[in-house]
Image 1 (cartoon, rainbow, N blue to C red):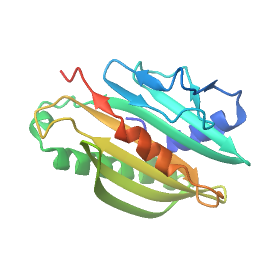
Image 2 (image 1 turned 60 degrees about the vertical axis):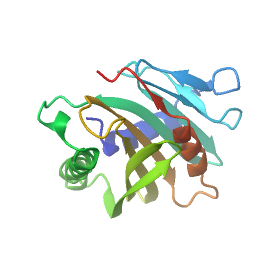
Image 3 (image 1 turned 45 degrees about the horizontal axis):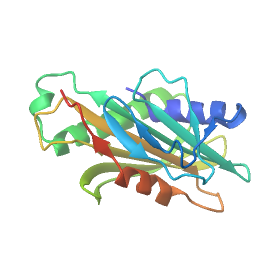
Length: 192
């Protein structure tokens, strides 16, 4: 499972690398084998290729030295017992695993500090998302890190949607509304 600390590492790589492909009206509707979304066009978002999965989408923007990241993908539920769990139970397990892994692999190594964590639920359009917001400090920079999980059926599914949004807390402007606008367009298919 991709973890938040990988996103922090990715932030440092993308923030210093060549720009990606600018998202415009011609390429902002993105279809993968398992989902489709529409990213706000002509607003500075850039798509970065080279992911390890055909359904991984990473977009970022930098404004006045502030970095913003949206990352979308799906994940299999490999454990057959878990495939019969409710969406809420799966979300709770995933969020607990994320947090435990962050503490084990990053906080204990001194790479960053988790200042707070809040879990919740949010309905966006026709989809219900299970959320986790964490404030993370790394090298003196505070980041808001948002995790959104969507399970396309109440239970009995084998794949779910994962979305991350990260922004610096001290940034003059937030683009979380554009992340939520993107989630509003989410359509999932090919579940099994």
